[in-house]
Every structure is written in C-alpha cells, then in structure tokens.
Image (cartoon, rainbow, N blue to C red):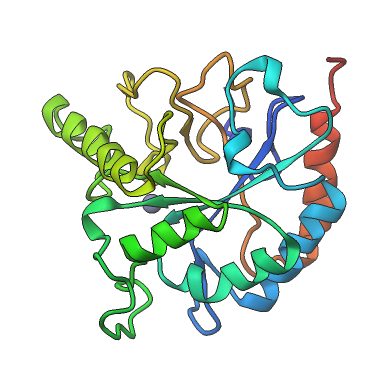
Length: 247
Ligand SMILES: [Zn+2]
C-alpha cells in the first residue's frame, strides 16, 4: 500500500461530498495551517466555481439515499480558533456558505470576546459565538475535550474525551440528532466509539471511501497554504474524481 492518499489531490469517494478542513484564517499568522483572509476568499471562490456548490451542514448524512446529484463541498474548521469568526465568517457570508466548526470543548470560554487575547493559538471562540453560528445556519461539532491523540490514550480517557465533547456541543446547540465529530490529528482509533448515526471526520490520513461504508472514517482534504497557484488544478481533480465511476 502506498501513501498516495496522504496527498491532498485525493478528494472524496465518487458520488460523495468533498470535505475540506481549515484551521486559522488570519492576516499575519505565518503557519502551514493558516490562510490569509484574501487567500481564503480566493480559495472559496475557486472551490465553488470548479467543484460545485457548498453542502449545507444540516444536509450532512451518511445515508446513501441522501447523496447529492452533483459534486458538493462541505467546509469545515478544526479547533475553534476565534480568527475564523473574525476573518473566515465574513468570507463565508459573502459567498452564502454555511460551514461546520469542530470545537475542543474544554477550551471554549462562555464568552469568546470577553478578554482580549493577542495570540491566535490561544484565542478560542466562545459558547456565545457557537450559539450565534448555529442561529446563522452554521453548525458546531465536537473535536474532543482536550485535543488528545485518541489512539494513544486508554479506553476510559477516550470515552471521556469523545462523549464529553459531544455532550457539551449537544447542550450548546439546543437541537437533537447526532453531533458531527472530528478526530484530533486525524488519528482514528480502531474502535472510535461514536454514537450510532454520527459522522466521524478524519483527515487526508483517511482513505476515500463511501460514507455509508465507513461513517466513522470520512476523508477530508485541504487547500495547501502558499500554493494558491495549484488550487484550481486540485479542484478540477476533485471534481473529476467525483464523476469517476458511474453511479
Ligand atoms: Zn484539531
């Protein structure tokens, strides 16, 4: 087996939504997980124009009957950094995109903007921000309580981290139904232990399989930072892969 699937060119299984993950959107943070607001806007525009329309998070379903008839894209954000509210949200709004935000629930303050935090790695959106996102049609999901490597902790810790974060998100959104979950570092345990019906999102470490075949290991891919010139070709590849087999 090769590690070809670790490359971002591999999108989704044919017929299933393309899922992209982002972390920071920040004007000055220089890191491979961060895009500038301008770059992010260009990325969203390229993806929507080349791959297809954004999938609304409420429409996320691992049921084959609910698959869209054309390529669609689900935008997701990991870790709940506050810069996503400040710099990504205006772009999403401008393009009419609803996104899914995965929160590290023990790091979420009650009120996100209550204290000024200059360090983008320490500034997390609050439960007030999360509720605002939900009211605006976006969705929040769980990303453990403390961003632990779920493959490296004992079963009891794993259960506490997964269940605790799902319960916290569930309480904040005032809705029923499964809470989407994303694995820190894309590390999926042999037995993820997610509640039935939960969509579990990995990273490029996850193979591109039909969601219905393995709902706890959904592949996501990304737009590489500082490689904006490659994005259009990446998007064409993702679109072509979607149509790759007769449905
Ligand atoms: Zn993370």
